[in-house]
Length: 343
Image (cartoon, rainbow, N blue to C red; front, side, top):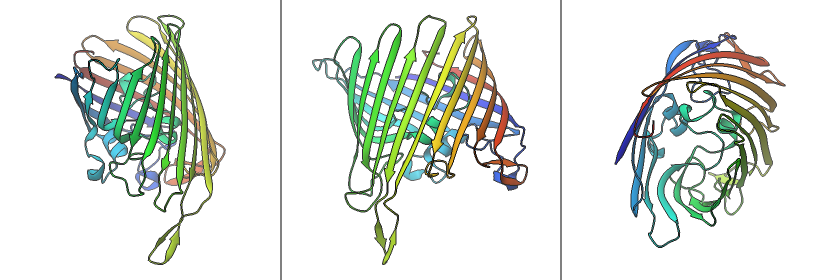
């Protein structure tokens, strides 16, 4: 069993200086590292992993703000403090087929929960609002060629360990890995609301990763989602609607390894939420992020990040006034200490 872990702390400065009374002193539209004008613990993590040969297991224990936002503040039903916990089976004569059963992070998206494994420190809108964090159920992956791996998933919807609407969510995945590029496509569909056979939520997610040189990488990540509620009757009162909600966004990112210890990364993102279904406000919002990284030896990573967000409506807090301005500028400094066999 391999053991690894990390501690991720940061200080964030927000030009708008949102207060406790305004929005809880948060960087609006952020997730994970959203506490601002203060030192904060983004996450503490402890990982146990045994690769399937033919049976394996993986557990990620998660603490800090990342746990609160991923599992919810009242997160006992979603596996509080547990990001992932699944068993794996890789039959020796099954041509590389692997099966995982339990709680695991979604296959969608270009970013992950661990900040050290992303190019930028803060997460994109696509990670925060367009896709789920995790699933509970069964997933599979099967190499069908030297470069192509496909998979299927049968899970209990988005960010839930238990299901109350009588139907599972189906996921289909494809990963094509070449020398100069990789292309991932993920599709999820299923009933996400109580109320019979209606109320479907669909998501298409795709990421094209370009790797032209060993030092320079870039990617394009696109997400498109649709949700239709189902009408439900509770104590004689009909709740919900059958309106179709849509959201979509695209992120462009690039990273240059300037020296063995120094890297620079940038990201630009466009996100449209016309019915306010995911962000809570009808808006088109954009962000630009620049991140400088310095990697010390023996598992110590430092980052300094500048980010600017702007919307077509007043969604950002200034001082004590929520929904006061259309833009937000932040500067964040972070330190990540990590250990393990693959650090």
